Image 1 (cartoon, rainbow, N blue to C red):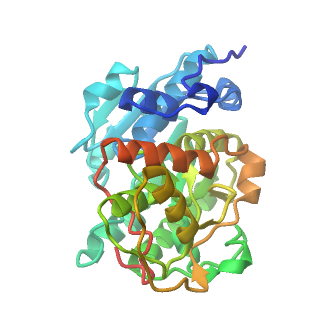
Image 2 (cartoon, rainbow, N blue to C red):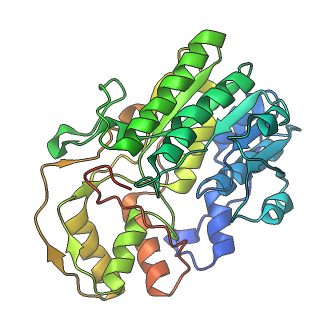
Length: 352
């Protein structure tokens, strides 16, 4: 038996004015998510829960399970160097401190039939490449062996595709990877290692290639809006991008448990729109009543994803790019808090 949850979505397309409202909206499960987790058996373990998406994804899993009337543990695992354990626990999520690269600590983690793997390293990779490879390519072997009997939804990235012509419509799931730079190569390593363990132990998995989840404190739109407010010139060389509202991404990722298999399928998770940096900045400037300065010209290539398969399989985005632009403009212009973590989406050489 499933039921709906009370909605925190702004009425009549109103704006978002508080972090509590934002967090509630990012973790609000859709009815399809409730139905998916209502059919799913067993506890859910979220590895790397303290990142940008982990807390709201774990909350959504908790809320959807409760709405479905399913008694299960939702457990978040991290070193918790920044995110508060107490805040997660206040929302009914159990927490465990663990260095996932420490195999003895991983061995002591509880068994769980359902695992969301969110661990990884991107920023700071340049100059410390070995640590990035350890996190992105070695750690999957530790988890693949420890949770060989589980279902695993694996976070990956669109960066493994490499640049494609803007007019191509974006990279598709069957395209040959062409990673540029060591970060992207190590992420392809993550996928290959998980695929090995899936084939070796018949572990059902799915690989999620995420392309720029965005909320109001973090994301490409936030980077652009804050640069406009600061009077910085916007470089147009990386002239196009994809985004998806983080709440929609959370919902799609949890629904992916219904599509795990061995060997693991690949699913692109992103929004359906190809966005122009120039047009988005002009709209942000209009909404914030700020001038916009541009430099350079749009390159003919960009990191773009064709999201049609994922949108059809896991459900369509509910928040459009146009609506998200309005939310971000209001949030930034009114002094809303930032996570202080630029996406560096403009990087074209794979350096992070």
